[in-house]
Amino acid sequence: MMSGTLEAIRVGGMRDLIAGARALIFDVDGTLAETEEVHRRAFNEAFAEAGLTWHWDRGTYRQLLRVAGGKERIRAFDERNAIPLLTFAEIAVLHRAKTERYTALVASGECPLRPGVEAMLAGARRRGQRLAIATTTTRDNVDALLSVALGQDLASLFEVIAAGDDVPRKKPAPDIYLAVLAQLGLAPSDCIAIEDSGNGLASASRAGIPVVITRSAYFPDDDWSGALLVVDDLAEIGY
Ligand code: XBP
Ligand code: MG
Image (cartoon, rainbow, N blue to C red; front, side, top):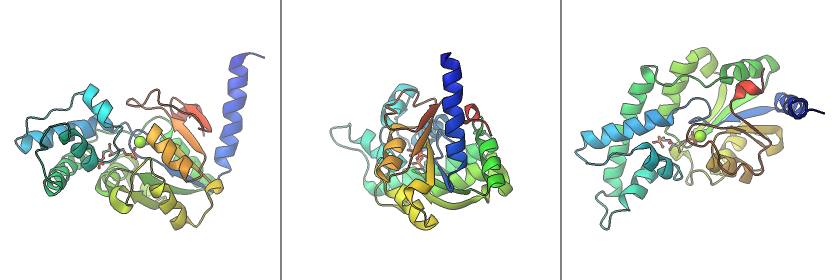
């Protein structure tokens, strides 16, 4: 049998499995939209506004993305200096400025949804599947993206949104997914997580949730061991 036919059968079988889940739990950055270039721009504009000489190019940002969470990322970068420049409190102020910049950029339409996302959400609504979000990013960023890229109607479909500092430990720790499961009142096996990064795969997997990976610009080839399915984008699954 041609490999293409096998591939079509495999993805088709997974489509039914995904459609049969009681809830779909979406990551945000890199999954709903390719947001990380806008995050990177917002970080750099906040650094300049604060009078810092820091500038994160794509290569530096790709390395720093291994650290989930903007505040934690800034601290990891600052700690490369023999004597870090910023206190935790100063990092928090800088990160709030970055978030304001990011939400303004998202509001101007900088982050369209990735292919297949809207169709998957509409399909979930038709099937009566519950929807949730489990993300490392800041809640303000989620609200900005959902309202601009999805509109209030589809945004209101997300019954549970767990974000950023809602939990003590960010991805790859399972905390954010465990928080979503608790709020949904569902078992891990009732759900499917949709993620774009190795940190996200580890976080959902440690919570016992099967994971579909939609590869993103900053994470084209992480270690996807243990993923249920890996696609280039959700349009491949097709709803
Ligand atoms: C991705 C992250 C976030 C963003 C930046 O989140 O790790 O830190 O890069 O957003 P996810 P903040 O893929 O889990 O959606 O600066 O608000 O953290
Ligand atoms: Mg992500």
